[in-house]
Image (cartoon, rainbow over the protein chains, first blue to last red):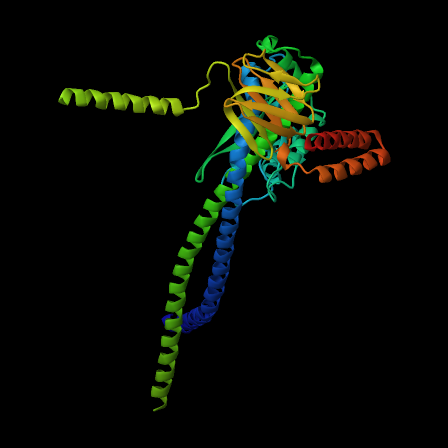
Length: 296
Length: 162
């Protein structure tokens, strides 16, 4: 019994050791290939970090200038106590993200706010405009019915007022007659922190019905219309600036972390590489010596 | 003697405190908080000023403190700001909005704004002639309207720069 089995087991063992041997030889090569690729990735993440650090510095400077602008645009709606008309349930959400990824939870955060709102009852009256491909990619699988328009080519260059006015025109001419809405964007707080925030959108009717509008002098619907169109563009401009700044800062942190992780991986891989190489050398020596011993 | 010294010390301290309080930008009687900002630059951020002259589509008007709350749309032209120390600042704006609030704060938000000193007359004239030729060669209504706006802005820049 045992005798019959023994040769088979032996060949199996030999095959396994053979395999291991070949695998060992290959691992050395594989490890060096992986090591190389991780090193390349680290180089990429490091340079991405540098690039976004430079872009962040500029975005923050721009944002400082845009802040009073955005606050001024929202102030009227606060002062006039404009509220959404209750009989018009149609809402419009604008997701301010960008085309570029690898920046932490920037885009997911914005999309999550909208996703949570869309999961609530009464979501059938809500439409979404995605600014930037990333928010579209996140929302389109489950909520493609809600998306009315998508803007892309955002995030490659710093946002300008022209971008914002194009967006505003697209929103006003998209054919969706909304009663109220929200601009969801990332509000920049510091290099390591940003928060999802929103700005209100109102229809002209809501503004005309505002309780405190009567204190404002000499208004006709023409003035209100142009005023609101411009203020929409200003708010979008401000939201774009805030978004760009948060995105760059969080990309900087994300890339810093990625470089650190790659560094750790490189350390581990180098250790395994050296160990394996030593093992291979030792084994070859043993083979040579035992071969020589057998010849004697 | 010691008491007198302490008294003077206290007086000095209270003086110092008052000095700090005065340094804070408080809105005084006869002044209003102005925010004048554009996409490219912030000129005033809640700064107390005496008077602001603005060009609007319903005619140019001056804003003094306690102006009745209003909304208006900016026309291309020069905004003149009378600062609280009597200085005058002239800033050219292309378009935008004016908001005068109930608490007498004023927001002038422009698409683009530049101090009048930094305008170049010859460059403006060039832009004007270019805009005029575009206006004349415009094919459809929309292009014509856009060119008309460009002409208007360029004309105002030439006027402001001279």
